[in-house]
Image 1 (cartoon, helix red, strand yellow):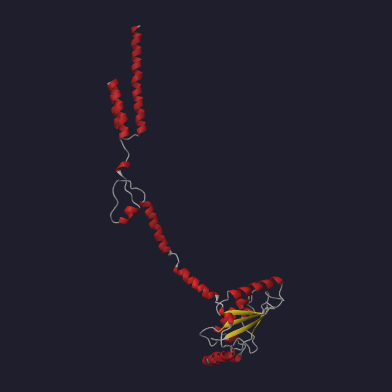
Image 2 (image 1 turned 90 degrees about the vertical axis):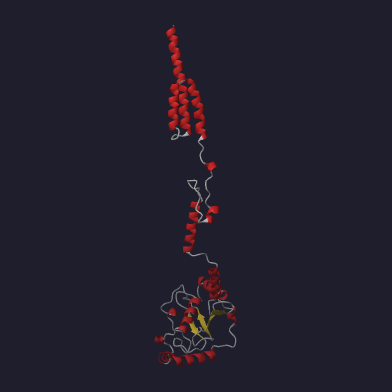
Length: 299
């Protein structure tokens, strides 16, 4: 009897195989002993074993999973790698065994052995010889024994449960039909999105976009209206009012105002108004100094 941890692992695997069995593989357990396991393999299509159901008896020892379980074919079969007593010659149950293998791996390996017999390591020498010398005779005899000993009138009830691979194929077909676009499509979509994002910015000039892409006219490109252009009037208005005030104070200030008008196009609004303000204050200060000098001369 395997350790408790190994027994729990086997019970989980048995439960999984019963609920979600692989294609062409089922298991039968004893209600009184969960480790009394018998695997059923459906004969692969295109082989002499098609239509048959072959049972494999498992016997787990105390050394499991360090050592493979003992497996025996309890259904009569004509196969080079299965002896008349049911011994199975496969490397998975010998030198290639790993502790991570379980019941499902063993049954899948035996199923593959039904598809690809190995006459080089034959336990049934007669079957191995016929396989090498007369393949048609080998197939005819294997088919006859299968029909007599392995083909029931109705399939075992365990095969009423759908296999995992059939369900996965349906899910894969459904997911493929609803799959997202390929990388090339997504890249082209992303490039179109980025170009639309760039075109969404208003153009630097007032020129209208080309009529070659009418869809872009309404979706992304918005020409700048004339009302949004920067107005020059706020700059001219304080200059004109300041000029009128300066002309009244003296002709020498008008030249300064003319210079300001020449540079107002290259300078900002705030700078121009600041210079005009300073210019307005300077004549007032100079005029007061002249009045003081005249007053001192009179004294």
